[in-house]
Length: 353
Image 1 (tube, rainbow, N blue to C red):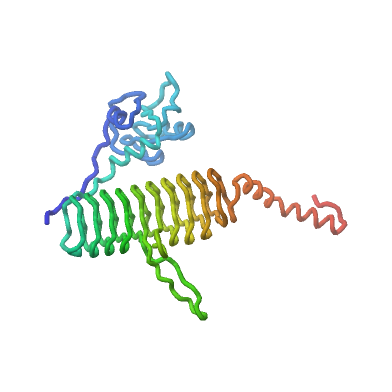
Image 2 (cartoon, one colour):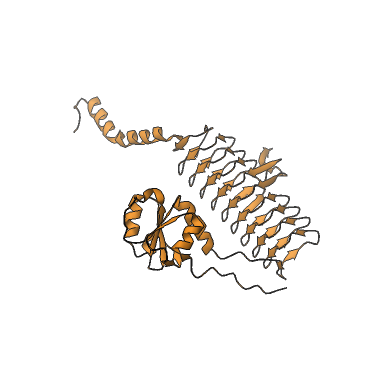
């Protein structure tokens, strides 16, 4: 076993000229300015690059203590001068993601297996795999090349994960379940717990065995303490590129499409079907056996009781067209005064002011 020092993030992000090369941007002002890190406006200091995604935030950022401002090129006026240098890019959000990735400590590199790990002799480890303390890899399991399994991760019997995966401490990929390439599981994520299947038999709640699996596509990320239940039979699936936040519950036999984003505390009852490029805000609840189309947006805390067509924007309990929901809320706020008027008319006393 070789001792591996802890990975270290770079001390300096670079000059604005260097950052412009990385992001395809243009420097407005002094390109030799050096920035060490990235910070929000409120936390900015003379060593930081801050960012602005609209005109209001750009004005605030220009008045901050930051050394320079990252912003969308569309917000920069031709020939205008600014009180501090700008890094103007096609998309500030995309550039921010790329620059933050450079500040993230690099993943540990294998080959490395901690002596406390329990690797079954029939398990297969790809080239350059890094395995931390107390990791368990079951019989017949496969771990793809360059994947990283941090402390306490468990990979069940005959489970398989692809190349370049990152499993944070205490994540669990259960028996026979599959994760594609570059899958990230945050701490406490459970992939392949039993689905909630039961039936009343002679007045008793009897468990229905859950013998299916879970499949995660390439580039899926699953948040901390999120659970994705294995199918009763067949597959619970999450499409490539989908991101699921912390504390979500994905019921058995659900199917989630590609590049869908699901925020924290969402709950999908069994056999929910969600399409591609869907945005699900926090605390949304799905009744089972519903079908959500592609490119749908679902507002926070909504309850989905029925199918939703492609491209819809829905909110509310139960969810409905967003404009209809806003209109209904306006009517509801007027109900107390309307009630008082009707009550006065019914009593023959005329309308109350």
